[in-house]
Amino acid sequence: MRTQKQNVNTAHLSNSKRIFELLLNKVRTFDKKAEAECIKNRDYEELERLVLEHLMASDTRSGVDAWRRGAGCVGRISHRPL
Image (cartoon, rainbow, N blue to C red; front, side, top):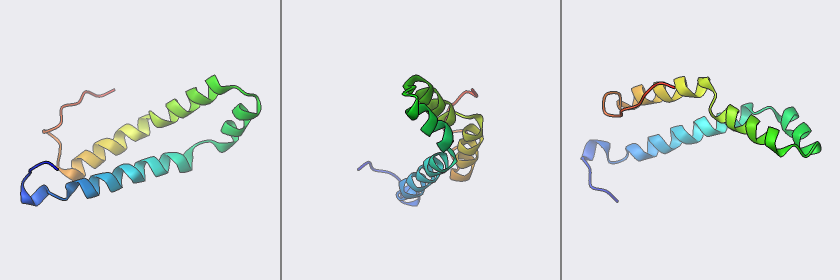
């Protein structure tokens, strides 16, 4: 465990929960019909592309930015827009 200030010592719990929720949303919104079609056709390149595009969709970016604002990390985390 790392040493940190008392007022943020449990922040990892809310951070982990938020990441879990974001990933759960990705699972729930993935196109299951397209997935089944790719598997049926044994087109794993297309399946990989669908998964990666879904994970990196622009709606995720805004969700992560909103999460950072809620966590109070803006200004402490350096990131460039995609």
